[in-house]
Image (tube, rainbow, N blue to C red):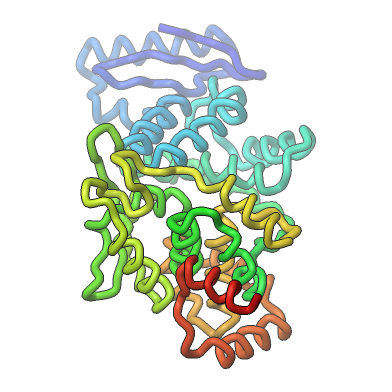
Length: 370
């Protein structure tokens, strides 16, 4: 049996019949000890059943956090799991380690939000931390006892802080056209084309296999896989299907014809997937005279921005990109203005019948001009 003090109140922490009771018991140590002794006596005399104990049921926050992260580890991608776990261990656990669920209040959450702001964390980071707390509680509310206790507390989360509306960087049509011939490796160049015209995440492209592609239906399936020592899951374990545009389809056909029959990976001719293309992109961007930072993610941003500028349905783009929340997709609308829409129309008229040329054909064309 444990009796402890928090602020001006005293709490009990005991186990009866396999159920933990951790709650406020009075304003003095003596009151808390008396209540704990009464509960134990009633239980021994079979006057207090497990069903009765559940009315006083409480649990420490770190217990439900452990349950949540155990679930995350089994269903979410490694990156998502480790990111959330690091946020929790570095920022949430130190504040909530000795807090029980019944001790959570609206003021406690507001104070946590204010404290993190005062410590200099960005509004986005503070929102992420409170979002993780909310996820932990919501996940555990599948347990009836936890849900009943949480609903009885009537705790309100503070409003999300306003985040800076930073626009996603993307490549214009001219920048992307200038980038393509600057790749030294044709497979990397075609990889950039496919990512730009499908909106795939860098990891989704890296772990893409030939069995994920249906040329007949012109679709690519993003799905988890375990191949030899390589195990990969899409973000939040959400599988989805991406339709292939003419440009992406043509690029994949070229790769398929030149593939190594012993390799299962689309962007590798060995038994190992090629994860990184950052250096190749950065080098090509410098050669093309592009001043902005060009990373694999910028190809995904380019897809979303230019598709929305050309009038694509935002719900369709959300589904193709695998966004759980449409507000994530809507951020790309910030980069769209009249000039970009005019550029889209002009590009469509200029390249209406164009196909993706191979690297060799581009060089041949340049040599002929010389």
